[in-house]
Image (cartoon, rainbow, N blue to C red; front, side, top):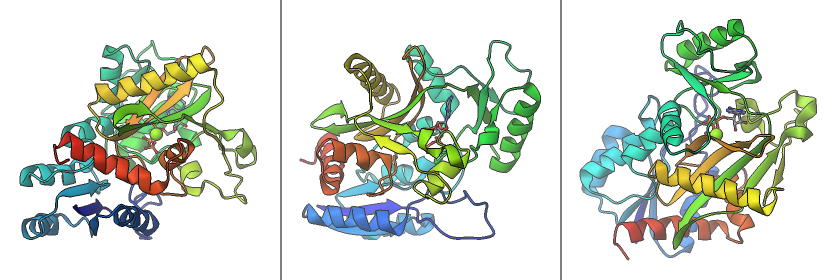
Amino acid sequence: MKIALTYNLKQKDESKPADYFSECDSADTINAITNAIRKKGHDVEAIDVEYPKLLSYFRKNSVDMVFNIAEGKSGKFRESEVPAILDYLNIPYTGSDTFSLALALNKAITKKILKAENIPTPNFQLFIKGNEELDPALRFPLIVKPNCEGSAKGISKANVVSNSKDLYKRVRETLEVYNQEALAEEFIEGKELTVGILENGKTKALPILEIDFSTCKNSGEYFYSWKMKEYQGDKDLGLVPAFHCPARLDKDIEERVKEVALRTHRAIGCADISRTDIRLDKFNVPYVLEINPLPGLDPKESNFPIMAYAAGMKYEDLIEAIILSASERKGLN
Ligand SMILES: Nc1ncnc2c1ncn2[C@@H]1O[C@H](COP(=O)(O)OP(=O)(O)OP(=O)(O)O)[C@@H](O)[C@H]1O
Ligand SMILES: [Mg+2]
């Protein structure tokens, strides 16, 4: 097959906030994916997303499939921008469609759907103006997040608040800095888990990954904050979480967690691949925090490949599984 890889390249720009490009992909990831696609016998061209050029590129060059990891640049629908262009041109692409990508990027609407499906997710409130009255049903501590971001952008220790004064301060900062609604939700103490779903012949969960932050005490960080994600592995900073894959869970709880991730994948209409982030509370209730239809695919750093390796797959097998699943969906096999 002739495949085009669409991506947004991570850049260095001192004039932008430190987390501005966190969602974008590194040259290492792009090289790893193109090498994997070639290893599996396909032709591949990697295309940095420049929107006006993208349309003319695909008009001039015929491809069988797009392997899409483009995060878009900003805005509530950024992850849908490339798929929307591909839909318009009728070009098949891997992963979730325009609608599911926009939906999953919106945490509050995703959570409303999860609640309707009886999938546990922390209680929450959405702040649009920043002066809304606090829902008296919500219990502190709360965590404040931008409603439509990823890579823990805008999420630091200071975003976990235990009183309404701090809550409104963080809500207003989030509204201003990230120029979007702020979500406040109950902070769930407990195990941090993430579950990869891969449609590899059939839709199934990979071994669950548990991320243990008790090894990061010296850093003062205690959850998957932006700082933890960005500097993960930095021994000097003490940001050395321990990864356990499969997670240290009893069999029945493991099955329950996987089931919740599968139901989330289906409820949001994801395709081929997704990663659901979960917190398991002290009663072993798996609370879904969010679903990522474009999980990071850095072969060394990202959570999803760690889970694929634990399932016995090589990196190129993971990439091929995504292509095969998309081909099957689109009737290209
Ligand atoms: N309600 C919560 N209770 C406990 N911890 C939470 C909660 N919400 C977020 N966190 C912590 O913050 C991290 C980032 O939150 P979340 O996954 O919602 O953000 P994101 O920016 O979409 O992340 P990603 O990098 O996966 O795209 C979580 O992995 C978890 O450690
Ligand atoms: Mg997350």
